[in-house]
Each structure stands twice: as C-alpha cells, then as structure tokens.
Length: 522
Image (cartoon, rainbow, N blue to C red):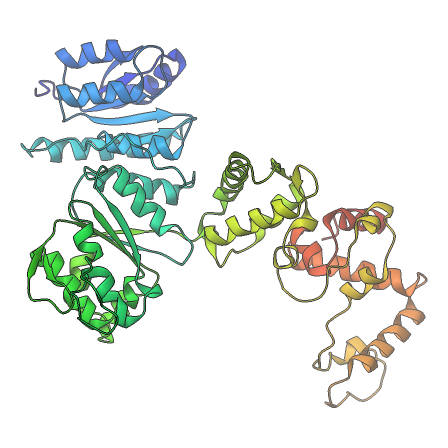
C-alpha cells in the first residue's frame, strides 16, 4: 500500500479524547493529513483502507491493547512508523515496544517539541524503509527477563537496543563499569531471542586461571594434561544451538583469544589435547569493563577479535550517570527481599533516601543491592533509617566519626561528638592570611613575614582568644554557628551534604539553623 496523497498522513489511536485533540492541534498547523480512532479495532480498519506514514498508538486502551494493535498493524503493513504512547514507562514496556517493531515510544504527559522531533524522525525513517522491499518487523520471544530496572533516558536507550537486536544472531559487546548489570542484559537478550529454549552459559574469564580457561571453554581429551583423567566437553560444545556469554573477555589470554576468534569465524574448534574438529552453532555475547581499543593499541588484545566482537555495542551507564533510577532500584531490592522472605522492611526514610541518592556508587548497582540487603538486615523496624546505612553512605568523605546519636537529635543539645565532628582534622595546615590570625589591616604595624606553619594547638589558641575578645556569645556557640554556615555555603545550601560534612544528622542541622537564625544567610 502506498499513500496516494502528497501530504504525510498521521494516524492517532487513543481512547482519550483529550489526547487525540491535543495531537490533532499540534499537527493541524503543519502540512499533515490527520486521521484518528478511539480504539485499536477502529485504527486497524483505517489502516486497511489507508496507508499512514506515522501512527501514534496508546498502549492501554479498552478492548485491544496497544501492543496487540501494533502486531496487527505490522502484519497488515510493515511500513508505518508506530510511536507508542504510555504513562507507564516500565522496563517491559520498552522492550516489548521495540521487540514488536515500534519506532519509539512517548511518555505522558508529552513534551510537544519532542513530539514534533520524533515525528520528523519517523517520517524520514518511513521514507528510508519504504525503499527496502525485504523489511520485516522485529519479532522475538514474549518471555520477559526481570531484574533490569530503570526509567532514565540512558536505560530506556539500552532497552530499545535490546529489543532491536535480540531476535538476530549478531555478536554483541556489552561495555560498562563493574556492577552495572552486564550479565543481566545478556540474559535479557537471550530470553527475547529465538534461541531462548536452548542453553545459556555464562563464563567469567577473569575468574578462571589461564591454564584452565581453554579447557573450560573448549573441553579436553583424556590425558591432555595432568589431572585430565577423562574426556570432558567444554562450554562451546555444551552450548550448541544456544547462547554463550563471555564476561570480562578483556582478561582472556592471547592463545585463548585465537581459539575464540576461530569459533566466531568458522564455527568450529578442537578440544585441548585433541585433533578432532568439532562444529558448534552458538551466539556469542561478550562483556568487559576494560578499554579494548587501548588494549588493541598495546597489542594485548587481538585487533581482529575486537572487530568480530564489536558488531553491536551496548554501553551500560554507571549508576552515578542515572541517579534518577536509584529510588526504583531501592524499591525493587526491597520487594525482592520481601518476596524471598528475607526481610520485612518495605520502605526507606526520606533522610536515608536522600543520602542514597547523593552517594556516587563506585560499585554501581551491585553495590547498591549489597547496601540495601545489609541495611535491611540491620533495620529494627519496617524501614531503613540513616543509622542502618554503612558509614561511607552516612559520611561520604569517609573521614571523621558519626557525631550524632538518636538522643542528641531529639533533645537538640550539643554533644561532645557534635563539637568534635565540626573541628578541622588534626593535620598540619598552611599559615592563614595575616588578616585572619595576625595583626589587623591598617593597624600601622609592619606587614607580617612568612613564618613556619602553625600547629593545630597554636591555631586554636589564637582562634579561641580572638573569639573571647570579639564575641559576646559563648565560644562554642560562635564556633558551631560559623562551621554550620560555612558548610551550608560550601554545599550551596544542600542540607544532606552539609550534615554529612559536619558529621551530624539532618534533623540536628535543621534545629541548629533555626537556633542560630541562619535561614536566608547561605
């Protein structure tokens, strides 16, 4: 079917009259031909007689669902670019949408500028694909691999690529820092592939000694080496017809790299100590946290193997690049614990949640899971509190001591720990400017000459004397007020970060701000 009109045709399928009206208004000011339908069934009838260039399709409708309608559309005409619309941006939605051939999907409420950009891209794609006679929609297994959580744009991009490549046999290279979930992504690709009912084997190349990895991958013959008392098939042989995941492939030795390259190129190998050629049909997914391009330059990784692996690359973002996903990941971890009856904790206090979101997570999602599991075990009620979090989360600097107890945060009084936590660390310091601890500017005295750095005791003796002379308040109140004000100014008024620097809880910090009338002064 070919659109006979000169203007691009846009079909809007949604049971919400307001959504249809809003999109019609956006497109009416442009040179588009607009069609609309209030159900999937009605939309399919329109497509039987028309050939729209772009279809905007709601996922959740009465009667036929959006995904069912999408499949019907693609069976009638693979050319229309279908953009799904949803208010529920789940992992499954992203993968299912791309798996069944959607061009993209939009989250409600809409950013109308993004709608226009997406429409223009879809129209261009429609024109490009119209010329490809053998175009087919992507169709995969309907199995859904749980465990990958993310509403961020970076993760939505990952889900889209999974949906696009899962049904092919293309080799995939997954890159990213340790703990970002590379094996989860590989299993998700496998679950949505045409090989989902065949074996899936994961091998951690970094965990195997160099003298054993070849035997693990390719098997060995009896007597091939000391301890080889019988013939043993390897992973490539056992995984025939399925998918093999080689994690940390950057740690693989050069001789093993050569054998893996031959498997990719020829689909065959020999067991260690054997001469018989064994055929195998496997899909290879590799992963690494190392820079393979640099390793190729340094001649520590085969260039030809690198290009064979890097057919499609999926880069997983670090957790610090998608901090907006942290609340959803925390909730997922808690639900998983509850499902396995390992914890009764169901929520996280606002203060603890703020600290979790502020932390940089060098160990990524794996570290977050471990922290939630540990904190849930330590929690005494049904919620994780600040006190249940590890010290590196409570005090991100990793220095000093936690200076607040539950009693101190309740009574609002200054404890010895409060004061100690607010004092500078006991390390040698450079001499301050003369106007800080020396003669007053303009006093007529000679400019001071550089002297040896003060000790902490000397600095505090002079600071104590100055505050005694110039402040009518107690020395402790003056010092505490100034330290709190400086911490708030340093962090741009971020109370979570400031309380972490000072070594007190956020509740105590709020009380001190009120006590010293510091609002609007930082």
